[in-house]
Image (cartoon, rainbow, N blue to C red):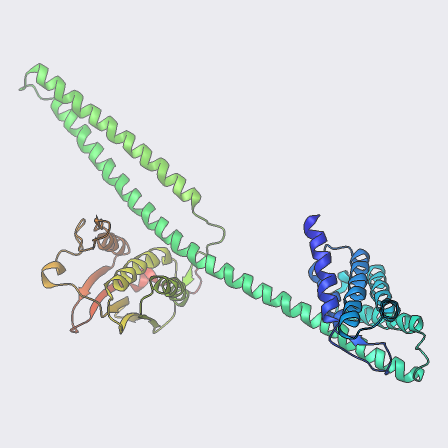
Length: 431
């Protein structure tokens, strides 16, 4: 209720102020303004405000603001100012009553009906104002009617045009926001998918450990060389270890199921074009570079576009490699180039940067789990060293490989090579 009153007051105030933009077509106190354009537009924009009540508030606002200008700027007497501007107040009340009777809000998607209603309301209200002013005989009827008719059509058309411009602009902004959220959702889902992959891999490792532990238990059970006391103790420990490992596996399984339920499925397509993957990653990292306030040129190239159903893993791998490349950049002329091309039945991604590079001693260790050169001196926090190790595992899962290439001095290049048959989705693949 409070918001609605505020909206009604805003309509009255803005209409009255815009009514000061006007001209006098007949050389009398009768004026044609663009205030009615603002009034009609705001009635559409604030679609829940009552039209007649708003028209009354607007008419009163027009009266007082025009009186104020006359009293303080033109030094007109109060009674003269009231007499001069009451007809304008009646114009807006009449205009609002006609719009309410015609239910004009229902017709904004039918331009001809909409303009006809507004034009009719405008003409009738203008003639009412002229009658109240007793100025209908100031010019010939044809001249008065043609002037009022032209002004009414122009103003009605302006209302419709202004409303659709604002509406489409709002839709455009909403669409942009939706696209931004969708791209962030894709990257988040890609990260979650890769984490689920590693959880499942860990479950397989745990399963293997449990089998080995139970196998040891069975072996000890058949052993008769150890003392019975030691044998029973080791057998108990082995059996308990198997039980503990089995419980850990069940916990992992519950986590995997919960994460898969959290991941969106309805909004995510089964396949995605490589150009769309690049566009998504580019938008996210462009904003990231702005946030960290670094001068880094990010460029993506693709020789031939294609669809892939493995886009979550590809996005996760590229995201990690590009993140590392950006973190390695420190110069003013830094760049990160990402290119995708097909060669010898392999889809190849090259991620190049001119950052600080990787020295020879570290090159053979970078894909080892736990190895890292990242250290934050402010927090004392050391990186986990799992990024490139995970990339290697994900790449091998797609039957490909990732390697470091140092062919050009001053440039670091990671090359990701994936089989075309595994990556590229055929034309009949579901979208």
